[in-house]
Length: 436
Image 1 (cartoon, rainbow, N blue to C red):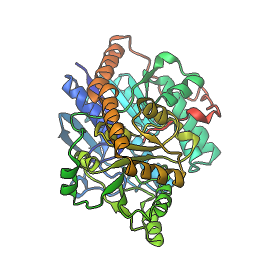
Image 2 (cartoon, helix red, strand yellow):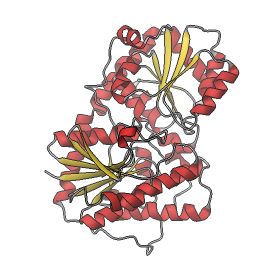
Image 3 (tube, rainbow, N blue to C red):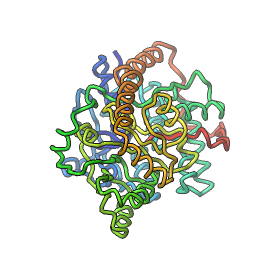
Image 4 (cartoon, rainbow, N blue to C red):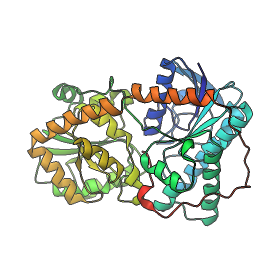
């Protein structure tokens, strides 16, 4: 079996989507007989605050569910403010090989997580040093996503990021894409089809499964008759002001409560705005440990999956959607494009136009007033998760791909070079994709 090294900025005990996905694949590969190491930094996402037990060391190691985790010091920043976040990302990309390169040993294969794109710096240096191929995982078409969100405007920085992005694709043994939208965009930009490996996120259906709602509510102390739950990052990508607008329209339904569980750059503004409007039907809660998320989902009557109305997000497949499906929770899906097609084909969600508070309020009322519809969505959602997104099945496909890659002739691992110009992204926004 192979020694596989994951390079990622995010890993448990952090609770974000990337940390959850990478840890699941890492642990499942261990279960399939591989030796797995993760090179990451100290936990700090999204607050930027490092827990006391992880402070004060340049290098530290731990074992988590059979995975050896090597953590290096890097600059940390809250998930708000573009410049500081870029510095944090760049810090890890530059320091990971220097501080952690010796400790990770000699892997047979390197899997480099992107976003953030600057992980490519560390990944390419390590692949060159260790003489091994690397798989470049693309969960976010950066810098295009930053451009569409309006946080990256400098033309020189955009050009440099585009060069780093495309040259990293070309030098990778495989480019692992998480959505069809990312795959289609890279194909249109000229990346060879044989270099692209499409494998979605997933869910551990043995941990995330339908549970009695009454027991979950009793444990959490929830009293309201009907709860709409959003659990995840409260960031600029999610358009959560729409939720406050919808809550304002639902004031006359005191039985309905909306709970926003999580942290992120947009949370302070959302809290202030909810107080200003006097929205007593909106409740903010701190993030839950990931192992308690199934309990949290079980207590909800509906789960909200929401992104902003941008072309960028028509290819998004939020990981919280898989967990809600597996737990048999009705989904209100305010994400257009790929996620909408997936859920509607399976009859597992109610689609809501993104950034349309009236449509969201009406969809919430529809589920509140039609328990039979909610039950049908629940049943079909669980079936979809079991049939298409269970991590056991997905990890088997990843394992087979790794075996094929390592049994073939070793690809050329080229150093950084500006000899090739980056392919320019086509201005066809419908297939731009991110994974959050």
